[in-house]
Amino acid sequence: MASEDLDSGAARGRRLSPDARRDEIVAAARTLFSENPYTRVSTGDVAEAAGVARSLVHHYFGGIRGVFIAVLAEGGAALADVRTAGPEVPLAERIAFNLSASLDLISENRETWLASVGHGPMLADPDIRALIDAATDRSIERTLSVMTDVIDDTPDSRFALRCFNAFATQAIREWLAGNRTREQVQTLLVNAFQHLLLDTIPAL
Image 1 (tube, one colour):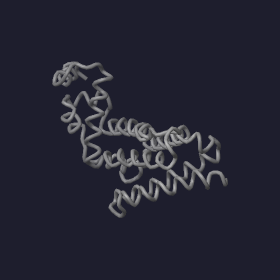
Image 2 (cartoon, one colour):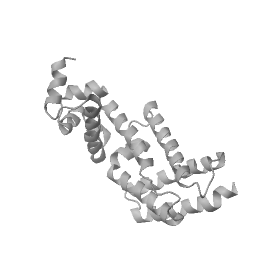
Image 3 (cartoon, rainbow, N blue to C red):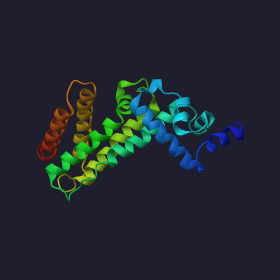
């Protein structure tokens, strides 16, 4: 790739380090994927939104699949990290706060979330599957870290949390498909999760 092609992209905006430029492209792509299905976004769209040359997007990511994977990797981390309420917050309030924060983030990134959990053409892609698995693992780790006063880190706890993740995924699909309201889904998940923590996991 000619260096002048890369330089022309950078010249459209501020001079940034390679890492900062890459982050800027991912941020622009995140917005596009949150509003459009994966199949309707091109590297040209991403380049225009980021204010760079299309060649620069290909240089960093190889193509639209690489951009999408980068957005998914960032999103998986964000979905766990947004749950910030820990043992310092009463349990019922903590559960409601953390679940609401997760639903807010999913709502803001609707199309990306749908694509990553099976409503897009990339489900069978091993890299996408690995990212989904990694996001699930990170979610479990975060739950264990903010619920240390309620449950211990045991194989039974991890098993139950993994199952709850699948349950929550299906409930969220119903909401995003318009079959249930957000309020209904949030009520379901809050009550089910509290029951899981206080009754189901101790019974395992």
